[in-house]
Image 1 (spheres, rainbow, N blue to C red):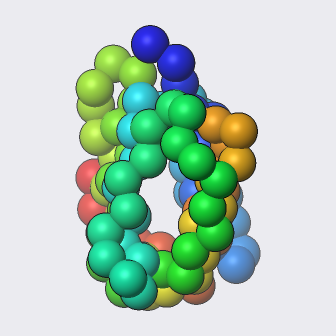
Image 2: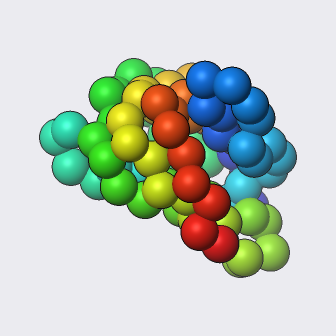
Length: 87
């Protein structure tokens, strides 16, 4: 199975970085789900929970207050205004 390369950062620090099976993020137009091969997108995030599932199936969750998510060629960059780790 193909993987995503993901960086989750806030304005002052890198929170999570690595390979992932999938990500889910809240956008102002609804929840976005991304897996390898996803079409390129740039979306504004809404407050909510970002879930990153690593290749072994373990989820990492963080609450965000806003920001943006960018997907291009299996590279996902999530830049959040504020992030709180929840698991």
